[in-house]
Structures are given as C-alpha cells and as structure tokens.
Image (cartoon, rainbow, N blue to C red; front, side, top):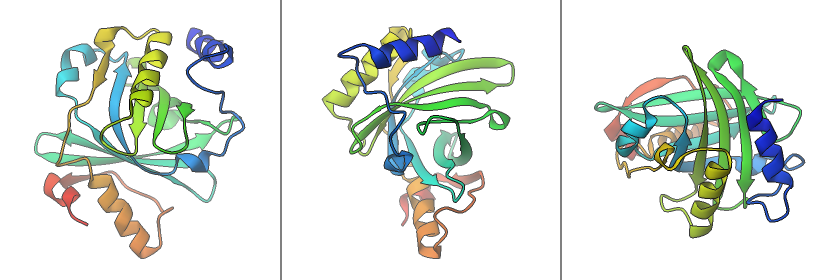
Length: 207
C-alpha cells in the first residue's frame, strides 16, 4: 500500500478529521459546473509557476456506463484549450481512474454536496509521476470552510506551503467548459463524448 493511500486512510478515520469517508455516497452529487480555485501539486516547477496559474472551469458529467467525464479549460498563450478525461470507476463509488490518460487515481476527499469539493489525483505525465489536491468551488470565491479544509488536506498529505496556490481569476477561460456544456444540453447530448479542442478565449464568454 502506498504511503499516500495510508495517509488518506488515516485522515479519513481519525475523529475530527477534515472530511468524512465518502466510499458509499453517490458520485452524481459531484456533477455539474465547478471552478478550480486552489491547488496543491507535487509537479516539478509548480512552486515557481504557481503565481501564473489561473482559475480553471470544470464540468463533470456521468456517462451511461457510470464513468465520470471531466471537461476542463486551460489558458495557454492566447487560447483556451478544452480537455476531456473519462474516468473509470474503481471499487469505491468516489474513486476513479484512467491510466491510459495518465490519471492513476481521482478521489473525492471531502464535499458538502452543495458548494465545494476537495479532489485528490495521482497523475503520470511523460516520465514524471506526482499528486495534486484541488479545491472545486461552485463559485469563483470559495467559502472560508472550504479554504480551511483544502489547507488541512494539503498539509496532511505532505504538501509544503510553496506547493500550494490560490489560483488567479481568469475572465477569459473560466466559462469555456460551461459554454460547451450548454451546447450539449441544447442538443440533448450532455453525456456524449467531448473531444479536446483549442478554443479562442473569447468564445468561452458566449452562451
């Protein structure tokens, strides 16, 4: 068992821990639109580049096979790149993966089922493997409770202060996934297949 998993189990079982264990809950409560407003990451270079990291827009849907489909926007140069990852369910209802796309684990650590969720991921990109903790918020300004829990989870999982960041506002890309989701809703294909697509930033503000 990996050291990270041991830590997750310990944090989930200690009385007064920053989250309840979520193994029996319904993943559909994670669906819909979110903003990623804070992140902790072990990726090389993150500590240096974190001041330039922007808030990301994310839309989570459920496929007919009960897999999660996560559509996110990333601001690169003058464009908003839209990326989709389909995550396959593991034994726990709140743990997903897709090793073929570099996602070794996607786990919901904590959520109040209303306005925030804290998500842990183990990623593998090229020759680098690293973990992240992200704070999902229904609004661009997370609540004090959500921010506090994000900090506690990040520290508990061993992330140093320089590996944690509150992301900067990005008025151009943050709504791009929401615009795409609106298109799918209008066509009745919300659960359909998204394809990665670089989109001009301005188009993300439409809809």
